[in-house]
Amino acid sequence: MTAVIEHVYAPRGSARTVMECRDDEVLMAGPAGTGKSRACIEKLHFMALSTPGVRLLMVRKTLVSLTSSGLVTYQKFVAKESILAGHVKWFGGSSREPAQWKYSNGSVIVVGGLDKPVKIMSTEYDVIYVQEATELTLDDWESCTSRLRSGVLSFQQLLADCNPDRPTHWLKIRCDEGKTRMLESRHWENPVYYNDDRTPTPAGLAYVEGKLKNLSGVRRARLYEGKWVSAEGMIYDEFDTTIHWIKRFDIPESWDRWWAVDFGFNHPFVWQAWAEDPDGRLYLYRELQMTNRLVEKHAAVILKAVTEVVGETTAGKDASGDDVLKDIATGAREWTEPQPRGIVCDHDAEGRGTLELHLGMSTTPAHKAVTEGIQAVQARLKDPGDGKRRLYVLQDSLIERDEVLADAKAPTCLIEEIPGYVWDTSNGKKLKEQPLKEQDDGCDTMRYVVAERDLGAQPDVQWL
Image (cartoon, rainbow, N blue to C red):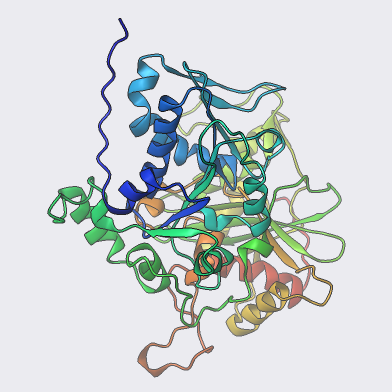
């Protein structure tokens, strides 16, 4: 006798609608914390259980992002009972097949990122679910639609979710044109945060009415109110994730490397590593944006990110743990990339001194002319006439995620910070006079390295 598995999920509003929806393209859009991803993944799981042999795909722009979001929801909340009962098993992938969840009835949910599309996009599916679809380009979206031809289900569907973005985003326009059906989700639909009578639960009071409601500017409008808006007075309105946020690639050893640092403790400490190609274009390929950590710890994390162990290290031999700088000096660790040609820092003498001591390298104070630095960044974001911008951010550049910032819905990296980087118009200040000093640490750091390359001298880093 087959054991009965009980799984309870009671969708509300748009979450209920999406379970029954059979449109070719469906987008669940709404503020953070409405249960959009949970609803979409529940639908995938239900289809896999109810229809033998169905082929489904769960995908995001990058596999790393999917692993820390969609796959956690699937394992922890959606398929937990089926996994424990052995009806669903994980297959890590092979040279022939991509990673996937395999069901005992022959159904599969393939998982992957569009940054590594070779395996996942070489086959056909009945339904494809895209998490945080605003990260995709139109080409990504259309590539997904081309793989919807498995034919096991009576319908084929491209299903997606997202938080609102700017009103001119191609996905919003696609919905406005009627090519994609938009289902607007709201906070009351999530039973974790709201009761059946739409009163907030304790968790809802803490998260939605506490954290999200207290956001400001464009982040509040999008993540709390669910509006498709652009930031009023956005400084880098030329920045477009479909253009400037690009796939990772192997950076040639011959390219110069530049580091930039903005000090902070309660506010984030920011480190950015940039590569410069022979034509002077800058590529952000590593970054750290972290609170509540001492500079010496940041230095160790940075050095670990750019070196690898090749011998016996000092790890565990003293109370402070790894002495990364000593390991480099003794040959126990080796650099995996060229050392930076220059390190530009915020004007914090104590911070610079501590950083230099624990990195074993000298630093240069950043050019602090704000207006000129912003104009230099803006110039790099524009099309110079050949279609090739002069500043890019590589996907998955963040080496460690600050969960405190993430939980507060504050930016955890440069990509998340740019939309809310706006001009300060308070107290009668003129537009385009001074940026608002709020959640601007990553943008400040980017400005330091651009100003160093475009407005200042070219230092050579020195080992101390």
